[in-house]
Amino acid sequence: MGGGGGSSKQKTIIRYAPYIETRHQSFLNTVYSARVSTINSSPFTDYCDIEVDDAFFGAGYTISSFPSLYDMFGKFMAGLDIEALWAQIFDDTVNSSVVNNLVSAESDLLEDEITQNALPQLQTGLRDLNAIMSSSYETGRALIRDTKTKLLSKFSADLRYRLVPIAQSRWEAHLNWNKLVIGTYSEIMKLYFSAKTDVDEINYAMAAKNILWPFTVLDFERAALGALQGATNSKADVAGASTTARVLSGALSGAAMGATIGGSISTTTQTGTGATTATTTTSYAGYGAIAGAVLGAAAAYYY
Image 1 (tube, rainbow, N blue to C red):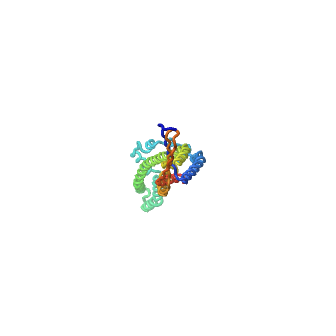
Image 2: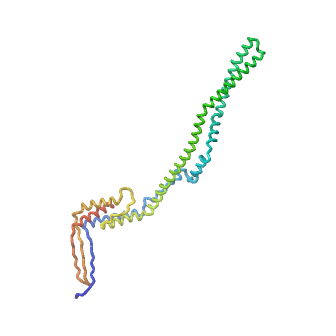
Image 3: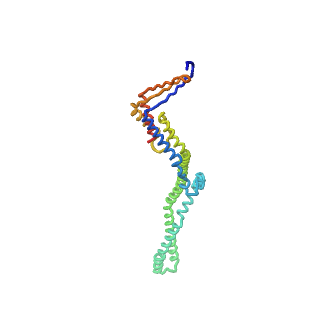
């Protein structure tokens, strides 16, 4: 139709080797099937939250069911009178019922010795002197009783003296025990809050993964759709090696293997309204490396 000014439109189509496009289409079909079967089947649905309070304290109890750290400190340490504590422990040790029973038993032994030996010998000696009814007999009996009192007092004093180090040890043990209770209580609370923070984080993470599961599946499909355009950055939230690391490794291996792959660019140019359309096809050997890279990336997602 005659010449004249007109608009110019150009469209560029990037094509790859037929077997690459076929493989990519098969890959997309596989991803589609996997997406349909898994998008509504979150593996996190049946996860049950871990209850830290039940593990630490038993069902029905919480941290508020127990005294606070400062309250516990107040019961065991604040206002503690170590002098009064020493007096109490000392009295409980040296004047205990066990000590009194030992002194009483020693008194009975001495009394038996006096009754069976000392007094009969005194009476026998004074009888030989015909002085049973004299004051010498009463004086001798008084001396024997005095000896008993001194021996019993010596025994009691010596026994209680030997118990003083034991009272000291009990006093120190009581103070250390108070300190140990506070330290242990503090460590338990520290462990509880540390564990609760970690477990709560896991519980919330599992809940978030369950809610975001459809988007996670679609994220993998999006990466598959863009595999041939070099979409190697994707978010993978599954166990195992990093997806990005696998994609990069696959891309590098694929680039090396695809260095000899041929590709082509078809350029169609249309000038003017109803103008003749010309198509130019140019081959580029360098596209083999690019295609190998994107296929390596796709394989990293696929396998």
